[in-house]
Image (cartoon, rainbow over all chains, first blue to last red; front, side, top):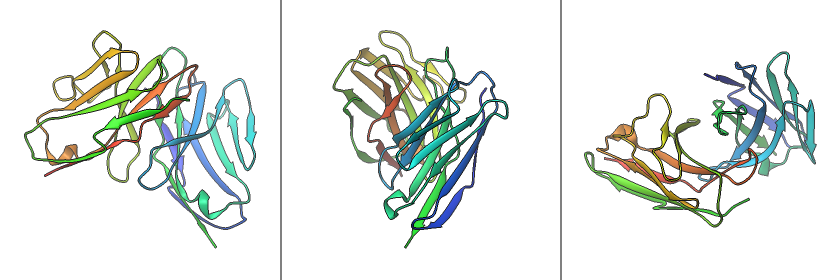
Length: 113
Length: 113
């Protein structure tokens, strides 16, 4: 089955700096890649997603890039703010698996003042 | 998106007992899933809740331990049976409204003593 690896496990940046989280997946048939943000004690919230027919997608300070050949995708957060502090999860799924998501191990992002 | 609620929000149970968790959505959804998130860990898919038929379980999860019902398109239950301390986790339902985008319920925090 699908295996998703995520790095780094923890990331500390200063407010205003950029943060990058990287994920790799094993199943070349995967074609949908969402990113979730989970604040302490809260549910995972979808922040951005990308499909395999697109190489990059941006939403304000958040962007995701996808390299199908290398089977990796990345989350980029620019101009980080303290409220960006949370655990971020990448995930992957493929058409025909009824939307079943395989999650990465998570990255704890700490934005310091 | 959809408004998803779960009951109970948290519970403390004795080993050997069972707990049924409810997931209610405010609109009809195509897919419903149940995930487990162990303390400090990522999300692991338990099963797909199929409307009107038996759930589809992932490797490592069995119906006797985690019976699931989905009587209609807006409601599902997950039972954690014969609980042990290792079952202490957050249990989350998720739904797909349209396409592949998956939204999560608030979760049920379970502590087994």
